[in-house]
Image 1 (cartoon, rainbow, N blue to C red):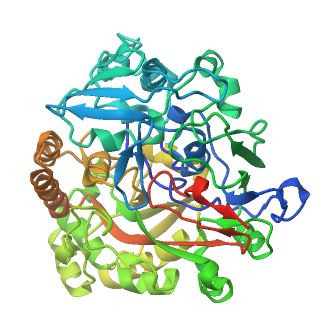
Image 2: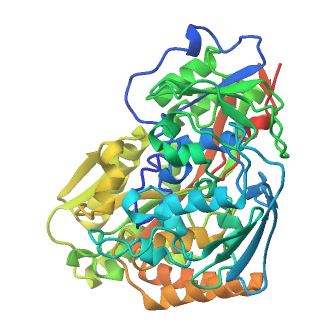
Amino acid sequence: MTSQRGAGRGPRRTAAGLAAVALAASLGLSACGGGDAGASDGTFTVGHPEPDHLVPGNTTSSYSFDVLSGLFDNLVGLRPDGTSYNLAAESVISDDQKVWTIKIKQGQKFHDGEPVTARSFADGWNNAAYGPNAYGANDYFSHFQGYADMNPEDEKAKPKADTLSGVKVVDQDTLKVTLTDPFNQFPLLLTYPAFAPMPQAGLKDLKTFDVHPIGNGPYKMDGNWERNRQVRLVPFDGYTGPRKPKNKGVVWKSYSSADTAYTDLRAGRIDVLQTIPAAKVPEAKRLLGEQYLPRKMGTIDYLGFPLWDARFASPDLRRAISMVIDRQGINKAVYNGDYLPADSLLPAIIEGHRPNACGEACTFDPAKAKQLFQKAGGFRGTLELYFSNAQPTYAQWMQIVANSLRQNLGIKDIQFRQVPASDYFSMLNKHEEKGPYRQNWEADYPSAQNYLENMWTSGSNRMGWKSKEFDDLIAQANRTPDRSAALGLYQRAEDVAVRELPMIPLWTWAGQGGRSDRVDHVTITPWATGLVVNEVTVK
C-alpha cells in the first residue's frame, strides 16, 4: 500500500507502496540491534519497506500503516474477515446516512496521558483536510460538509475555511458529522488510518510528532523513528481498548530490497515478512512449510490509458489492447500461477464482485482483438508503456504485453518507460505519462465503493475519463441505505466502466508471506491494517 499517492485530489491506494512490496534497490539493512531476531525478550521483528510519514493524515502508504495500526485506535476497527466493530467509538449512528452522531468511549488516553475526546478526532481531521497542508490523505475527507471550502479548485487560492463545517464537537464524548450527501459506507471509511485522533502535543509540533507519534492504541513508541532503519513499539500500559498485545513489542525493520528481506527471514534475522518476492515463492513454499503464509488479497493490477491523448479515445482500441493480454499466461510465467486473472473491476473478496463481469473484454482473444483494432483505425506513433521499478515483475509482464501487441496487433514501435518508484505516482498525478501505465489498488476497506468511486469517478481518476452516467450511479449507490440495492447500483456503474474500459483490470494479487519458528498466531489481513500485530505470540 507507498502508495505514493499524491497529496490532494486523485486516486489513492495504488501500490508502488500501498501494496507493492519494496523498492527494487539492492541495499538491505543489517539486523536490528546487530543480532538475530531471536532475543528472548518477548518482542519480534517484521521486515517491510521504509514508511514515508507517521502523521496519520499525511500518508497513504501501507508501510506507514504497518506502524500506525499499532499506535492508534480509530473510531471503527476491521476484523480480518472484513466485518467492522466499534473500536474507540461507543456508537456510530444515523437516521438518514447524512448526519451521523458518534459517541466516544470514555476513559481512553493518549500515550502522553492526555484524554482522548471528541475534540481529539475533530482536530486531527481538520488538520488532514486543510488543503494548504497538502496531506497525502486529504481527499479521504471529501464526503464531509465544508471540505470544498478548505480545498478550493484553484490550489493557489486561499481557502474559505480552516475547519470542516460538517464536524461539530457536541460535548467531550460526542461528535456530530454532516456529510455533503448521504453515504452508507461512512462507518467503513472511519476505519481508514487518516481518521485517527490527534493529541494537542502533536498538533503543536507536527515535525516532532512525525518521528515520535503519540497515539491512543495498544502500542507506544520506544524511542524515535530511526529513518531507513527501524521503528520500535512496546505495549502501552494505559491502554483500555480491546486490542491488548499478546507480546512485549514489535520492531518494524526497514528494507530497500525485498530479496534481502526474504534472505533475512530465512536466516532468522526477522520473524515476519508480509510479502515474499514472486521469484522466491516456489522456494519459500518448499522451505518454510507451515511457516509459509498464503492469504487472499484485494489488490488488483490495472493498465490505465491517458485519455487526454486522442490516440486512445476509441473504446474499441482499448478493448483490443485488453484482449491481447494473456492474463493466465502471464500469471503462470511471472507469478507461478498463484495470482487470479481479473474477470471484474472488483476482486473476489469484495462484496459485489460478479464472476465474469468484465466478460469478453478481459478474455484473451487475439483474432477478435485485431478486428476491434482495425475498426478503431489502428494506432499511430510510439506506444509508450509506463511502470515503476518497485518490483522486477512489472518489467517482466510489460515485456510479455509488448510482445503480444507487436505480434497480434502489429504495433511495432513500443518503448518502455520505467520510472523510479519515488517519482511514479507524482508523474501520474500530473498527467505526464504519454501511454498506458501500470496502476493498482489495494482495499482501504472492504467495499465496492472504495474501488469504483476512488479509481473511476470524474475528477478522481487518473485516466481523465468522464462519465456522467457512471458518476450518477455511484452517487445513487452511496445514498441508498438498503445494502442490496446499493450493490446493484455499484454493479451497474461497473458495467458502464467495462463498456468504455478507460482502464483494464489485469489480475488480483495472491498474499504470500512467511514467519519464523519463533512466532505464532500471525494473521495478515487484506485491508489497510495489514498484520494484526497485537495477536502475534512469541515463543
